[in-house]
Each structure stands twice: as structure tokens, then as C-alpha cells.
Image (tube, rainbow, N blue to C red; front, side, top):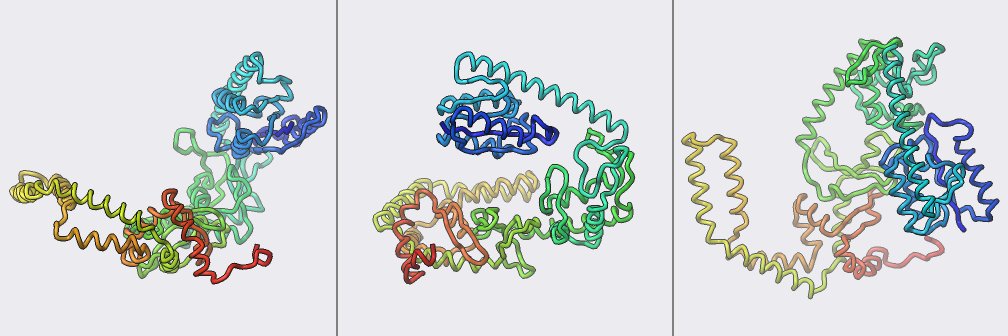
Length: 489
């Protein structure tokens, strides 16, 4: 029998009897006593079991996935409330475990929940666990309201602060210089990303709920707009109230920072509105290093560049950016080896002919639409309809007119389509950025980038067989010869 441990402790429960080490010791003792094999341990530290969003407990989610695939036979917890304090989650996931043939064992309760009586006990204990959690939440809110009334901060202290002897926050000598540096750089016009990189270079790390992690532009934004540093507290209703602690940042520096951030924000928003263009690889490119998204930015000359979004936030990702043409040339080279079989080409052409024929069936409507467009223009010029209504109706009519094409153009369109089907790289070369994006999304689910190289693609399921057929040809053409497996595993 393979047994797995799920252990959890929230940030308030790091005491003997609840600690991760205590839960591990109890698990090892149980496994040895029963002669089971310890399969593994799933540990969630600093995680609450009250939430019904299991994605907030990554180890819990991984444990459930492994249990449902049959990786172990028994799930062991130190106590039921380690598993969940939400009755719906408790019942839902125990039902899944039961159907997968996984037995659940709680060391403290010493019960086998796979029996009918065990199921009844599970329902009662799960309800009590949720009652305790709900009651604890209410009591916590009361305590926070009382602390706010006394001018004391609630929760984990932000970066640069520590608790004084009387419980009032004071500057932390180790991190307060970093806080002042951050505000100073922002007041000079540095972006949130640049401030994050400066803090990380000085080896400062975040505090509070973020844990000990590198700064990103998002954490910097939250820090630079936190009025805690001016000597205020959240009042619990979306506003601020005066606190007992003194200001951590000079008010003049605070005002300079907010004004510079406002200017930067206005400039960035204006630039972003002008740069909202669809690029060939928008939405399907990923970073090989950190597995994050690859985003598009634009140079002053209007040229598109691809770069890692996480790196732009200040994360320590080594991904290098490059002009989009670098990657487009690689895609075109790859597509030169991609061929759609002739029988499929004929099927696609036949489907297109039927589509064009269906457009032709409605061509009698075309003169009526043109008449409506002319009449609409007259109504607007006479003042019978407003500008917004005129533009709305005109766009609707023009959209319908665009579905009709001249019958004389059908042979040319079909010839062009046939050429593209026989040579997809040709279609890529002649397409604009928006058309390339549609083509890329049609062929690929994901494109993976490592610096200036596309290192992997994931085809759309319906095109995967075609890519497999062409893979050997691609390897032979681009690598010339296969590398030895022992020298390049």
C-alpha cells in the first residue's frame, strides 16, 4: 500500500502540534506501524483551508491529481481540518477520492471514511470544521475593527516596517533604506519596472503576503501607492484613517512620487493606445525560461519587438527580446517544409466554392443595400438622424456589402487560394500582420521562444498529423544530419 501525506499550516498556526514537522512525524510513525510505503508528501505552507478555490493551494491540487491517476492508495492527514475547512470542498473531493479507490485516513480522528459510518462522521466533522473557520473569521474581523479603532495596523506589515515594542510599526533598519530608495527613484521618473529591478539588484525582497520573493512592477506599484507610509491605515470601508505610527516617507517625497507616476501613466496610456496593433505572434508566444507570456512592444520607430512579460515586470528571467522579423523569418522557413496533401487541398477548394456560391445566392440584395446606404446619407445630411446613429447603420450596411464579391474575381481568388494551400509559406510571406496572426493561430496553439530562437511549436490538433508527416523533412533540411544521441542527449 502506497500512502501519501497532505500537510498544511496557515501563517498563524506555526506552533508545535500544527507545524509541518509535527505532521510529518505523525505520518512516518503511522506508515512504519502499518507496513505501508511512503509515496510522497504534499505540503502547503501559509495556506488557508477555508477557501473554496483549490488553485490557491497548489500542493492540494497536485495531490488530488495524483490520487485520481492512481499514484497512491491511501491519503493521510494529521487532522481533518488540515484537508479542508470548507464543507463543500470536503464532501466534493472525498467523493472524488472514494470513486478513484483512494482511502482517506485522519490520524487524530482515527477513522476510516470509506465506510457508511465513516461517511456520516465525515459530514459531521466537515461541518464542524467549517463552523470553526467561519467563527474564527468573525472573531478575526472583530479583532481587526478594535485594532483599527486604536490606530494599530492589521495583518502583516508591509516592506520597510517592523513591529515596535509597544506594537506600533517602526522603520525596519534592514529594509527601510530600500523603501526610501524606491520612492526616490520613482520621484525621479523611473518606471515601476525600473524600480523593481533596482530593488532586486540590491537584493531586497518583498514582505507581507507576497513572501520572500523578488520585486515585480506590480508589487512596486502597490508599495508606492500605499498610504501606510504616510501614517495612515485602511478604515475597512475603502478609505483611510490616521494611525498611531509615524510617517515612513516624507510627505514632499510622497507627493513628488505620485505626480511623476501620474505623468508617466498619462504618457504610457497615450502610447499604448497608439500601439494597439495585432502582430503576427500576438497571443500564442511563450517564454522558454519562465513559461510566461511573450508580449509585443514597439520601438520609437514603430517596429514590433517580442519580449518576456514577466521580465518586463522585474522578474529574474534571462529571456532576451528581439524584433518580430527575427521570428517571422524562422516561421516562414518552417512553413516552407509544411505541405497540405493534395486531396485535402481539393476538399478545401470545394468547400470554398460552395461558400462563394452561397454568397452569390444573396447577390440580388446588393442593389437594395446600396440604395439604403444612399438614403441613409440623405437622412443624415437633412438632420433627421444623429451622427452616431448614422455611423452605426452605415457600418452595418457596409459590413453586409463586403460579403459580396464580383463574380469575375472568383477564379482569381480560387487560383490564389490554391497557390497558398500548395505553399503555406507563400501565404505567410504575402500576408499583413493581422492576416499572419490569423494564419498562425489556425496552425499553432503555442510557439515557444528562447532568446532569438523559436525552439518549439504546438500545432492545433486538426493540423498535428500534417506536422508529423513533414517533421522528418524539416529535420533533414535544417539540421542536415542527425546529432549523435550520446553527444547531444
